[in-house]
Length: 218
Image 1 (cartoon, helix red, strand yellow):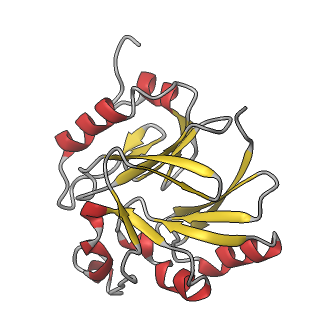
Image 2 (cartoon, rainbow, N blue to C red):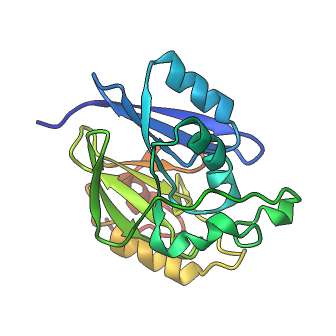
């Protein structure tokens, strides 16, 4: 029987980036996805609820999604930092992760574990499938969890409600759109889409209505 869960969304200035804190109902083990600049708010939520951070997941390595990695690793050193295998160089390169462009060069600790297309792993009671969808960044991954109700996917900046990730900063639009169509639209319509910016949506809604990647006639 699918288990229920709680996911808290914390938005960080200045990029309105969203960090997610997820845990199964009845569990104190939590994962933190894409820790942004507002680490104090992330830690306050964790501590207020008496949670233990057991993993830090990065959907990709752009600055707004990794800005809190170092502080989180300092606070929770036993929590492995997990990122896509083709994205690791962004952690240590301020040019590649775009922090230098904003005048605040940021680097992250190295990944403790990398994941690749088709891989599955379990953490905090969640079982995730990894699908790599580059185009916004070189090796963006989405983390898909279907053993809970409702099923959900952490998609980073691959897909948004009514939009898709930008590709004008060294990305590839066709690569991104083809990846979305091949690797997201075959997921259940009711699966929640938890993006790196903006509101939660669903696979079905975006497949039908997304003006960039939607499929006409579905």
